[in-house]
Image 1: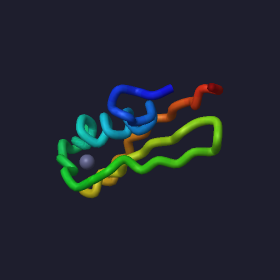
Image 2: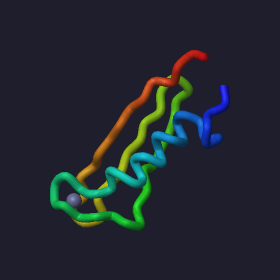
Image 3: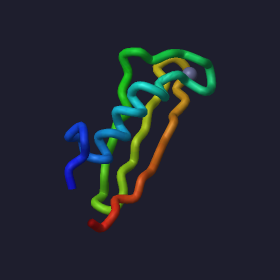
Image 4: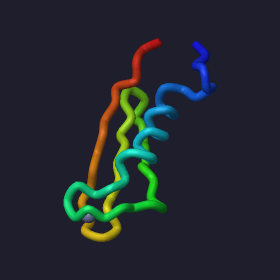
Length: 67
Ligand SMILES: [Zn+2]
């Protein structure tokens, strides 16, 4: 099913994280050049970002819907 901007839900979510959640909750460092990493095992996607300043890791795990 196509979305209005041509991005898949996963791509939209990753874009959201890239824009909204790259400020470290631990030390407040703004990782302007950073990106969420993602990996998948086929049934879920694991997003993670490690703060380059303090090393705090933030994670999100999403289940991939069967359709
Ligand atoms: Zn930090």
